[in-house]
Amino acid sequence: MTMKRIGHALYGLYIVVASSSLASQLTDENISISVVAQNGMPKHIVKLGSRWNFGYGSLWTHKGWQYAAYWDDAKQVSIARRELPSGDWSVVSLPDYQRTESGDRGKGGRKSRGFGDGHEKVVMGISPDGIIHLSFDHHLSTLRYRTSLEPVANNPAAYEWTADLFGPVQDNLGGHKITFVTYPSFSTDGEHFALYLRLGGGSGSANSHFFAYKDGKWSPNTEKNSQLIDKRWSGGNGTVNAYPHVMVIHNGRRHLTWCWRDTPDSSTCHDLCYAYSDDGITWKNSRGDVVAEKGKRFIAADTPGIAVWDIPPGTRFLNGGSMAVDADGRVHVLMRGEDGPYVHFQRDPTSWEWTRKKSASGKLIAGKGRYLYIISNRELMRTLTKGFGKIETIASVNDELFKDSSMGIDRTRVQQDGWISVIGQSGKTVSVVDYQVENR
Image (cartoon, rainbow, N blue to C red):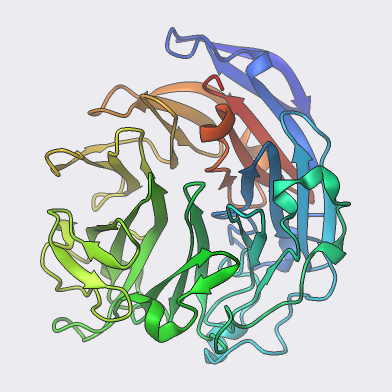
């Protein structure tokens, strides 16, 4: 396979495209770079070595418009939008909340008063009714959640893009105050919309909660009735926490994969786990046995059939990674394996059998058809969804675009128009790289 340099240059950065037969459709017309803004939060504010500012939900596409959310250089939440495929970005900052070590950092003690250690990313989601949801600045801290006051995303051209579109910061979802929050994330399949919160403690001792949004309300809206995974179990030291790869909703079915961690030490990560639900309330293990009912009966580390791949603690198996569900319902997980290199796990939707193979590092996203994509700071790769096909690089970009941030992926766009978008930051420059991988 040869690589061809094409004519996209930005601050000395070039994209090269693979010319293999598999990747022949990617040309200079199929890749673009856009500058979102020049106001990204500078790296010196965060701890040395932290990879931060973009995570799940940093980019989101809804009805032909794309939205980006991040921390800006005034330590405020900035939100940008553009009309696809190539409209100019418009940016607005929300000035009534600023990241700070003082103030209400929740009940997590010293750990929750950290600043810029990578936990406090801005996450975003857009519900089917066109409301934009934001949650931010969490590490064992009080919930920070706000929304647009109108269904802006359902008719964006009708609204001037200003801070006045967004309501105040809230510490609840319509119920009581929620504390000890870490790692919020939103999920959708275009019809259903959900929020995950890790609550009740920190690494090695915390619960997992899921909230469903419909008709402008969260249900349930309390910690008690939203819990699905429990930190207490009958073995080990008595507590664990799940590290989910976020929830993926596919054709109404909720899929959830995670690993356990027994203590704050990452070496205590173990096992790949899986559960699914068709209503968000009753949950089943990989074999189809009912194992939990949200708010009443919880999944725990010793729940039968919940671990689909036994991986002992004390290896190089690590939380993190990503999950995708392809068009045929196969569940895919990509994460660091127990021997160090990345591993691709796959669940067959008919036999329910799990298989695995060593893979390239990156994050997964499923296309509309038979392809699965792996995205890293430097490369876009593609393989077949069925079985474990050959992985081929179809594009490569200088990773200087992402040198001062983690990488965020738009997981909603490819199903709508066939493009994959990736957001990153260099200095204070926030940029998005777009790859057209499939036709509309």
